[in-house]
Amino acid sequence: MIDTHCHLNDSQFDNDLDRVINNFFLSGGSAMICVGADFQSSMKAKIIAESNDNIYYTVGVHPDDCDKFDQSELEDLIITKSDKLVAIGEIGLDYFHNKSNKAKQIEVFVSQINLAIKYNLPIVVHCRDAYQDVYNILKEYSPLKIGVVMHCYSGSLEFASQLIKLGVKLSFTGSVTFNNAIKVKEVAKNIPLDTFFFETDAPYLTPEPNRGKRNEPKNVFDTAKFVANLRAIDAQKLIEITDENAKKFFNIKAF
Ligand SMILES: [Zn+2]
Image (cartoon, rainbow, N blue to C red; front, top):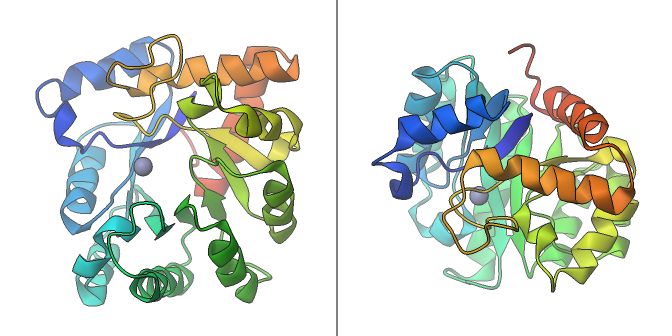
């Protein structure tokens, strides 16, 4: 199974990264995508991907860090990519943390969408309390020339349907297993099988039954099993389908 979004580059993994990676593959995991959130973590993601089989990476600047965005710095990192670069991300809008003003966040988001189009890479979108603005921006690019995934989807089913109409994919983290996550359970239960896949967002958002502990990629199986149960479908079957969705989306050929 693929963990399509994890932060192996987070300092919480500095002391036992090799063990965490091994745990994932020993649990039956097949590939991981290590996601960048600023220039430093994107560099680190690249190094981790290049030194491990079946680990891929993304580069991008998260809305919380958009005051540090430097277009040419990021573009250099794209130009000097290895063949394991699979997306630009995570990028987007965060009106919950609101670390910089909306106009700046939108400017940096749009710049990175344009870079993704220029280099023909899909984007991994972080969106918090900003669904309408993200939707409006994506709609301007419709029909979408690149893949777009809403990472850690937590909006309504109605919004999910609108995004899916644009061709956007959704990915679910362990947050779907939380007791109070009623809306996102409804989404995970009802959207078409070819429109979503799974991620951990480790070290954050640990799924039940380990909620509260540090998350790691091997826990992606817990989220998939939970959603399989919601949809009354065999877990192995669901994992096969969502892995195919992810491989197609990120253009991962083999592992
Ligand atoms: Zn993330």
